[in-house]
Every structure is written in structure tokens, then in C-alpha cells.
Length: 332
Ligand code: ATP
Ligand code: LTN
Image (tube, rainbow, N blue to C red; front, side, top):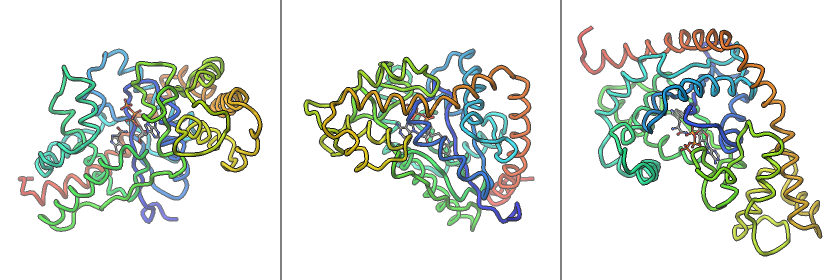
């Protein structure tokens, strides 16, 4: 397909912590399926990360790590535009503009804002509140068609669509209205310790979270301790959130169906099952871990990738911004 006919895909991950199995199965693993037939932009969203206080040296390190992880998960920088949000100034510029087309009431309804302000009661800053307008800017700058994300981002995505439609209504067609791509089988990986809550990279309980870069020993130990229930049967059911979450993870790594998994562990206890999930997960992540370690040795290469990515992204972003500036009535 000619480059210009390709549909556009955009997604972002914050460099705000060590990435989890949730980030991998819910988001990053799905990114590479678009590499061939779409024009893809995958961004390390550092401007979003500072809505929560970050240690500067850590933020810098995690920005490199997130980029390396994109590549370790199979994103070839020759086929995907991989870049850092703050390297393309139009994100902040359009973010501000869209703040002026996003309503206080809309932002007040965002569940991520409510959750994060409860967790960071001493730092409920304006950026945390307007976070979704910046995310809308990320997406709309590239005239994006498809946004692959986990289901926790659905509300933000809907807001981006509403803001785009509002702007288009006021000024005539300016932004493409994006669609979400939310994988139904892995859209929400749950905490291993509290299986009714999302597995979150900022969870203070390490046992609740599998990190993509955890050693095999750590992975095995965490699955061994995973919360299940007082029964013994491996069965997928809403009233068995712990076991169902483990089955979701096992299915993602083995390709087996829930029925096959139930049959495989029929008559066996949770101990055997957890061991098998741990093995499948640790083995499934091994190549990612190895490739990540290799890439992190070569900072100059990572810098070359982010530079090239920012230049590519800049070209697209500039085009949308000049349209936006003209429509609003800014003097050229
Ligand atoms: P935090 O927990 O600190 O809020 P996060 O883990 O949600 O952060 P993000 O960088 O905000 O991390 O998310 C990156 C992508 O991973 C998003 O598309 C998000 O929907 C997806 N994602 C995050 N956690 C999960 C999960 N538990 N299951 C499925 N997808 C997830
Ligand atoms: N808000 C997202 C990260 C994010 C994003 C985006 C995702 C920022 N900008 C644009 C998709 C498209 C999160 O917290 N996971």
C-alpha cells in the first residue's frame, strides 16, 4: 500500500515506572500487529508522566527504557515511528489549545483523575486534571484512525473524540475522529494480590505486579503467591476473579482456550496451575528481556532512534498545527 493511503495508528505509554504484564498484554504486544499495513506512531509520553512527581534521573532512565522496551517487544524503528512526546513541541501547543475546548465538567468525570487524585492527595495539580486534553492532542495531531489501548483508557479516548467533534463543528473539518482498538481477551489484567483491581505499575505491593523485566524466579514466586479462592477447581467464572485472571494470562501466552485450560488442570490443584502459568509467562517474556538488555547497552542507538522518530513525527504534527492555527484565527 502506498505510504499516503495507510491508516494511522497512535498510542503512548508513560515512562512512569517499570512496565507490567498489564502494559504488555493490554497494550504494547498489540502494537506490532499494525506495523505492516498502517502508519504507526508509538510515543513515550513524558509530558504525561510529570502529572505525578518524578525523580529527574529516574524519568530520564525510564524514557530510554520505555523506548527500548517498545523495540524489545517487536517494534522495528524502520517500520514504526518511535519517539518521545516532549521532543515534538506541538503536543504541548495543541494540548493548551484543546484545554480551551474541553469542559471542566467533562474532566471532572474522568475516573483516572479521581483515582490518581485520591492516591496523590498532596499534589492534585492542574496537569493531572487536564491530562485527557493533552492525550487528545497526542492523538489528533497525527489525524489518527486507530488507538490501541487497554480498557482503562476508553473514557479518555471518548473524550478525545468529543473534543475533536466539537472543534470540527465550530471550525469545519479539522481532525479525524479516532477509533479505539481494545483487545477483548487481555484488555484488563488484574492485580495478583487483589484480583478485582487493575494490575498497575505504581502498585506499592510488588507481589501484585509482574514486571516485563522480572527474572524467572521473581515471576514464579509472584504467581505462587497469587490470590485465588477457597475452591480447588480451575474454572473461568466471574465469582473466581483470581483464577480467571490467571487463566487469561495463561491463555495469552499459550494460545489455549479456557475449555482446554479447564481440561488440562481437571483434578489438579491450584499449585500445579500456578506453576504452569508462571512457566508460560516467564518463558514468553524471555526474548523480550534479553533483547531489552541488549538494547540498553547501546544508548547512542536509542538516541538515534528517538531523533529520527521525532523528526518524522514533527512533519505530521506541523501540518495539523498549521491547519489548527489558521482555523482558530491566529496571525501567521
Ligand atoms: P499507572 O498504573 O501508573 O496509572 P499504567 O500501568 O496504567 O500506569 P500507562 O502508561 O498509563 O500505565 O499505560 C500504558 C498502556 O497500558 C495503556 O494503553 C493502558 O490501557 C495499558 N494498561 C495498563 N495497565 C493495564 C492492565 N492491567 N491491563 C491491560 N492494559 C493495561
Ligand atoms: N493516557 C495513557 C497514555 C497515553 C496515550 C496517549 C495512550 C498518553 N497519550 C495517546 C494512547 C494515545 C495511559 O495512561 N495509559
